[in-house]
Length: 181
Length: 386
Image (cartoon, rainbow over all chains, first blue to last red; front, side, top):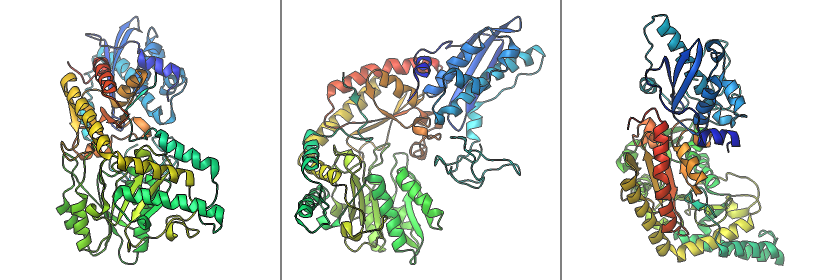
């Protein structure tokens, strides 16, 4: 199912662990999928001197975590901030279509860790985001009408195909469309 | 080395005798059983033999067996066929919250065509209370469909009791028995249902062959329209090779039922006890007694199921997972959430399903290989504070 490169990053993930007293920490949880990731960074001369992660998630989520930390290591903060989810998926040589959402986790957690560092430096109070609270707030009632701004297009969160906004399930892949996507 | 295969709910190895029956038929016969000449007669004899073999497995009359392409079609046919046949009488259907997608999505399709569906909650073991079904019945109710054995947690539903309630109100009752037939004794007369779905690939027959049991007098429209095959219930020339395989597999399953059940139950007990002894923070899902003999559903705390599954695969062990990330479904299993599992716990669930071909030695390999994998994934998990 996974490419050799993805499998390699999953079976032998790089940069697993925690950094005690990190300069920045980013925690994201994807409540729809159930993946959760924490990224820790050490910053030196406005560049990422060290980076570690911990992830609860599927093979793709772990591979993405490994790859995004590899890509960020040693990069100036401004450059690391530009690493996109798409870049990570590309670096892994692509992910199965139904796993693309997993790649959203990696860059988000990294960006959040960098932002945390910048906020701390600027003396702002740290943002606490609790993944469990976010989970509790999700109502995954299938077929529930989902809110969209007028005129905004609606895309299937699983296969990225445009779907009619009133559709209870994707006309392309058949998945139930959660109320929030 | 051949992989250790503990995913028999996804499909079972074809037994040599089944394979021989199929290839023997394929090599010699090509006729259409509907033809009234000698070539057709040969095919028709094979067709009716298979019908008797399948009927015997579930204690039905041969005439009550309708062959089709497998469990999913059988379920689609039962639900849509009964709903369509009674559309003028009422448009209300009762089911449980833990049915297979073949049931859920068939009902979803009917909902879009203005059928109303009442989907009932189960308890923490996955059991449906028959009293809830009785309460949900209205004068518009035209079908009750409740699975015999849940394919994720193995719980056996009180189908016979529910069927009595249904019969008293003259409502047809269907049961999705795909996970049970051929794996444990199933008798349609004991269950008292009007319709029952089964599939060959659950008991060492081929995928692509299944059947629907239709009790005489049950209102049912065809799902596939066309010719007069299968007593006008399922049109299209029959998949003879698949049906011959289904029949042979049914005969063997019936003959070997007791020894197969004893074997899978022993494996189930061995693995369940081994998991509880060797892996901390595990939950065994499903009902402790009313359950399939060959299935173990285990939730491993603090880690995710698909990553466990892939690491086991690397060790040559094939299991299934009910985690959201597997098989393209992004939400955690509706069955596991319905029995009240926490979202993160549901994510870490493996489903093992054995066959009589599995050995205790294989189970031992699994029990040896799993703990270090769990430990490794927990060391990566932000949820694990061990």
